[in-house]
Every structure is written in structure tokens, then in C-alpha cells.
Length: 379
Image (cartoon, rainbow, N blue to C red):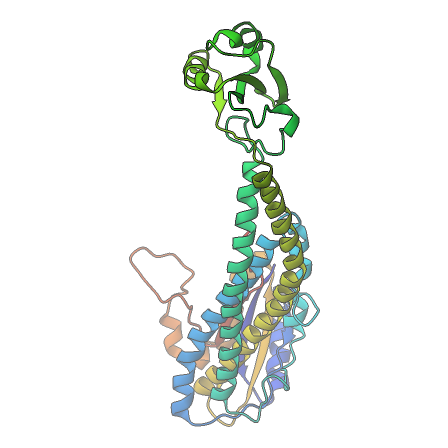
């Protein structure tokens, strides 16, 4: 399971005792790790209360950016989605390892700074990632979209696809004042009809001038040469036989430009792909690390607000066994219900009771935040 419960409880005689009790009571219910939070600057009660709300909003924002970067990585690695997980790392290790061995990054988030300053550093950093992602994704998506449109033109049915890569100069009568070569799509079942009738579809069709240039699953592309003045009659009569005349004029310059555009877009996409994946990898890591630091800040602030000063609490990371989640909740409640008598009357928000709308964040007598490492919603 990739769900973790980050909780804290006040130190009994010592924090180690709190940890030992938890380890003893949660045997077989969860895998536990100490979650190391350094000695942060407490500041005033007023600041802590305000910060508690700000951090909740920042938590949601940063989580959304982590998900966006991860999801975009999956979109960019379109053909190799199985590779996505191996690119979604934090500090070079998988996410579960990073969380379970969490160490505060003193260089990025110096603990001599106030809590508010640290949260502002994180906010600025992740907002920058969010803005950069929008710009990079927009540029890459435009490129990809233009390339897909061109590819679409060169694929599909003979009735709609581009004919530029199918026909050659030799297939056409060019530079003639009177004659013109037309291209006609004929269903495979009607080849015999075409051969029998094409010379009679208009008065001035050149006899024996038809050639089959290309076939797909349903139909073939035939060329036919006729006098220019017969074009309208020929089109009209061809339609009656369900032969489709394509609007196509051979223009070597245009066709060359189309091919060059396709090559350019394809080359640009390949050029951008590597740096973009590298950027996503680095910034996914940065955003995820920032997110876990916010969880640490929230645990610290909430623990001080709930359990008071001096700072004396043990933060613990529990990875519940899926079958025993309910049992683990009961054990935690039993251990910590004395911390907040009002919590006894608050129903677990995960219980679905019609008409009762509790806030999304469940409330327990101990500090609790959920961390879900399953960040990708593969469509």
C-alpha cells in the first residue's frame, strides 16, 4: 500500500517511550518509522494559529503541483508508461524510501529561519515550478499537436488523406494548355466498373490514360487525363458511379514545404523530449520533497498548538496493512483518546452517514495527516 499516516503524540516521560508504546500496540497492524523533525523555531501562538491555516492551503497546492508534474511526465512518456514510475523519484530514491527515511533538508530550508519564512520559501519555489510547467507543457503540446495534425493528414482513408507522399511528377500531364490529370478514388469492388466506364464519363477523356497509383484497404487511387473543359462534366458523372474526384494539383514546391515542415516538427519534438523529461524528473523530485517538508511543518505546528510547550512530541510514520486499517484506528484511539475528550464524540469522517457533512480532513485526538504516494491517475 502506498498510503501512510503521519501522526504525532506527546512524549510520555520521554519521546522514546511514546515510540515504544506505539511499536508494541501496533504489532502486525502497520509498518512504522520515526519521522524526524528538527528543532524548529516556535514563534508566537498567534503566528502558529495563522500558519496552521496557511499550511493547509499550501499543502493542497503543492500536492496538486506534484500530481500535475507526475501526470505530465506520464503524458510525455506516451509509449513507455511503465517507465514513468522509475522516473518519479525524490532525491534519487523511490517515494516510499524517501518518506520512510525522511531527513530535513537544512540547506534548502534553514531551520534558523522562522516557520513563516520556511513556508514562504516553499511556496515561492513550488509556484515557480507550476509556472514553468505551464510554459513548457504549452510549448511541447503545441509542437506535438501540429505534428499529429500533419501525421493525421498523411494517414487515414484515400478520400481524406494527403496525397503528396503517394504521387510522383511522372503521374501527371503538366504545363499543358488543354490537358489535365485528375485523381479519382475508386472503391475496390468497383475497379471493373471504372475500367469499363471512365472513358465515357465525359466527352474528352484521353483513352487508356488511367493508371492505378496506390491502394489502401478499401479503395484505389487512379489517375486519368482529360481536356480541361470537360472537368465539371467528368466530376458530376463520376459522382453518380460513386467515384470520388480528389481536388489535387501537383505543386512540387508546396509538397516539398510540407515534407520539410513534418521533418522539422519531428526533429524539434525529439530535441525537446530529452530536456523536458529531465526537467520533469528534477522538478517532480523538488516538488515532492517540498510537499513532505510541508507535512513536517504541519505536524510541528499542530503538535505545538495541541500539546503545548515546551516542544515534546514524537512524530511517527505508519504504513497501515490494508486489512487492519480499522483495527489500527481503534488502537490509536484507545492510546490517545485522553488527549482530547471532545474527539470521542466526533464520528470518524470516513464513515458514510447520509445528511452528515463533516469536513474533508478527519479529526482525531492525535495529530494526523495522510500521505498518499499513489499520485498518478492513469487514464
